[in-house]
Length: 183
Image 1 (cartoon, rainbow, N blue to C red):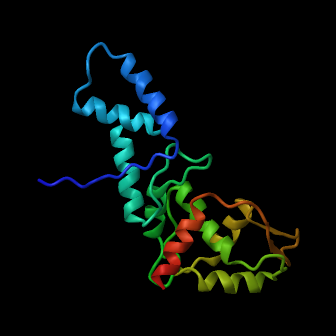
Image 2 (tube, helix red, strand yellow; image 1 turned 180 degrees about the horizontal axis):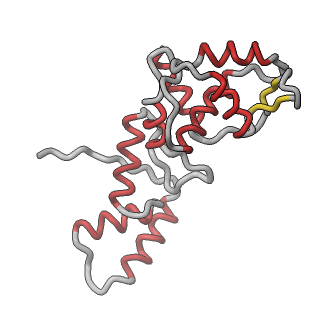
């Protein structure tokens, strides 16, 4: 059985070497193969070899850049992106309303990104836009969810809707790139 090669890119070789030396110094005897893999991966900022392997494989599947020494301040959950991709059809329309709230959240961010910024819309206008972006026939559910998740604000009488400008989650940009690659 052949093994898939995993490449490990280390941005701070000195920090990597210090971490590895400290871990090796705590061992009573030289580590075995699996233990050495875990030591190397922990020195590179992962929990263990399995965590490193999972992150690398997910990034390879999503054509993401190679791993860096430590996770970024806002790490990207590539597994969540893969699950979210299954919620959209080839035209980028939301096929179904996910049952899990983290998937609902990411799907709503996709809709949020498609709304025009700094433009006030009527209920009819925002409903027409949302109707184009989903395929399961419940635009009112999506409109209410956008408001409940505080991605869109509306007036008390419901006559005006406006996208709330804010920083999206780290997963939105890679997800949008993957969705645009489908169409």
